[in-house]
Image (cartoon, rainbow, N blue to C red; front, side, top):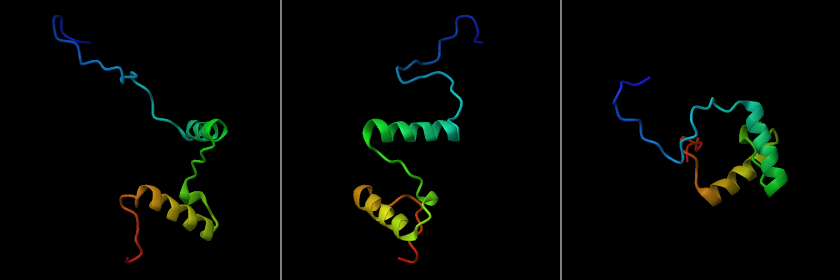
Length: 76
């Protein structure tokens, strides 16, 4: 509620109103859609249990997009 005559808050085409944060099931649904529609696999690296595979994926992501902020460099 605003005061009579007060200016309206700024509007933008990017404003989608108030939306609750995305929950885990919605994120998984978006990952599945990305895979089926675009062939893009969005995998949380921490969920990959195979050490070799996890490191290979991390290496490729670092090569393409650079290291993540706050990434542990193991003394390097």
